[in-house]
Amino acid sequence: MSKGKKMPAGMPGGNMNNMMKQVQKMQKQMADVQKELEERAVEATSGGGAVTATVNGKKELLDIKILPEVVDPEDVDMLQDLILAAVNEAIKQAEEMMEKEMSKITGGLNLPGMF
Image (cartoon, rainbow, N blue to C red; front, side):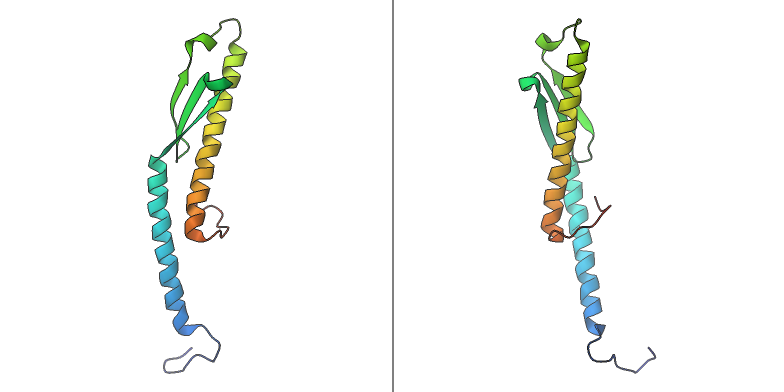
């Protein structure tokens, strides 16, 4: 549009600035929450507590604990399965934590690739 002309009725002229401000505010909130969640940790266990995995909001494995009594040199496969189960569950919980907190900001909007 050229200078001096008014937007036709029904066109979102002035509302566009408000919408952009709201989007910028939401982006900042999301960045703040994401940073906070990356510092949080979730813990998951397998084998009735035989293996415990701790993962942060960035889905990084922070710690793994294995009870000595489950370390059986004759059954390494079982220990590996317990470790995989605990780590995968902790990662799943970290993802759910991130999605839950972000949906509070986005109002449930599906924004793929945002987090």
